[in-house]
Image 1 (tube, rainbow, N blue to C red):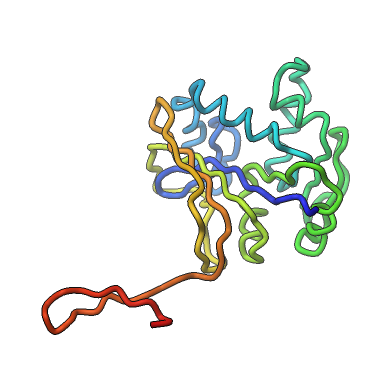
Image 2 (image 1 turned 90 degrees about the vertical axis):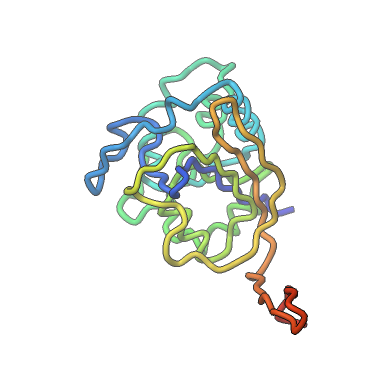
Length: 217
């Protein structure tokens, strides 16, 4: 059985994913709004994240997200911490064009993620999870490789910053599996890949009423 590839991402209402965790997390491009997740994090969100990590068999990360994780999670040594326990113990695969060696235990380099991701999925029990890693996520989306999207949408507008859904995304239709708000207004939604983009047309009948027409009709 091939492990599923899942993407978990924090994003604002206008689609920004850059530097959710702190002001200095990622200031590239002159971004000055880092840390927008923090005022909205609550027990609901924490429990959901813990449940996501419980399903992990390995992690596939972009180099930038890997560096952020590697600077923090190895320092969390509590074996009862559900996020740290998984990140520190499970294999971590880093897609990078600029580096090939990594100090965090259990980390390997992925040179060509599109060519290699299938082999990674075939070796796992549990999910191959992508967290953050917006550049990597866009490569995976451009090749239609993500099985499930887990999106935390925050009630925040930024107007600038790196976005998750940028140019190059394959037009497609997703299925909404579930959606629920947290106590602070974050909406957590799970979508699964469904297939090619479905479109249609709205036709005005002679009697003044409307008819929805699918392309196949």
